[in-house]
Image (cartoon, rainbow, N blue to C red; front, side, top):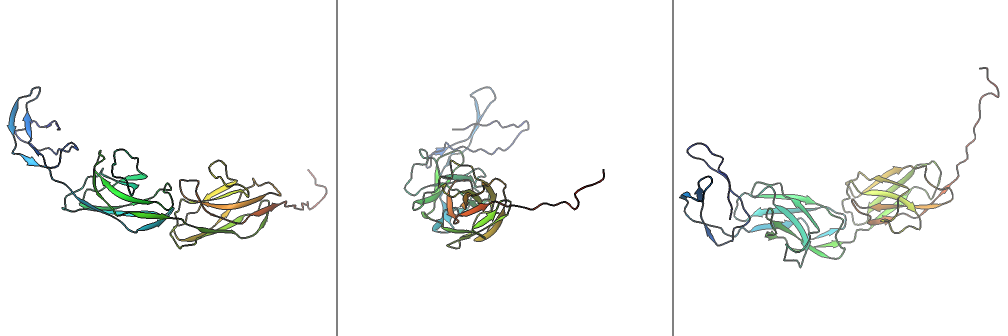
Length: 269
């Protein structure tokens, strides 16, 4: 099932052994094999592998698209977990974790008997149900799964402080979750042409991180790249995606004439 060098030159020693190949309910034994041979110098008493149930839960039963979610996990028998075990997010009806790519997964980084991870992905489908699964290191073996949670649409109100700007002016964009949900600091505000609806195929005129973890905020944007006479809009895009949660009404960019004057009409060199 598994073998490992002892790396021991004294008269005794101890090694830690881990493998994913044990079968629950089967009996095994440890055998000391002489270097370069198949000769056994000693055999341990038999030991059995038993099931290891892990309780998995999420902090809420529903999340708005773009929200972080917290997954907690705990060994039901109180034994230490492995640092490289992972939490996977799967569709609610998925039971074969070897054949399906998870929506998102993350290492637990936990060596105690319980812990929690904060997770985020923009790849959920609104209206669908998902579950968190605790999967053993280097396997597709689930030790426990949460009850399902549903993903909800997340409307945001986005506004600009004016409906027209002179070229060279700063645009102030305000945004607020209509449902009071916490926003992410890596979400972005994009400025795009008024008639643009496919944010995956275009390059924004300007964009900026919101740096906001509350449910609302305001940022200032500036760009010299507007075309005078054209109309634009501000769009709220969630982190690591081209998904919009809301957009402003359009604004127009106007020419900005300036008068220049010198203090004299002649100067000595």
